Length: 132
Image: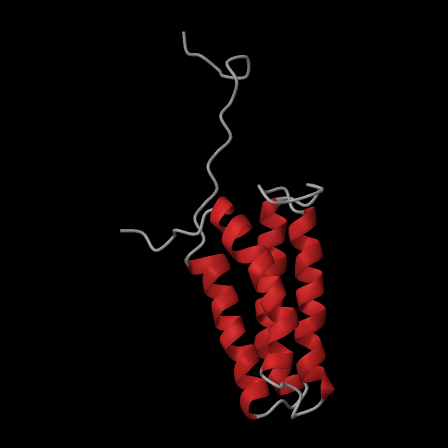
């Protein structure tokens, strides 16, 4: 059994927009920002950017499909790395730090370990090379 079960469609329908909304709303519900305002507003800014990224990605829920899915995944991974580093860089403490570290693990697992490889695009009969 493969752990790589998050397909492009699952990522598009079940992850992108819901996660973006959580990134925008959760800091208010959790009362982030005890370590400083960056702890709250970093999540909100990334959530807004995530909505834009999802809307511009070439996947089933993209509205203007100009960003290739592979690039979308690399942007997500970069965000995961930022979430690992942010608590150290901005001196977040307690819940503020843990919030970003938990998100970092979730993002990095989702986009790397659990991410299913894309299905290859079928080549048309005109492009196939035949032996013989």
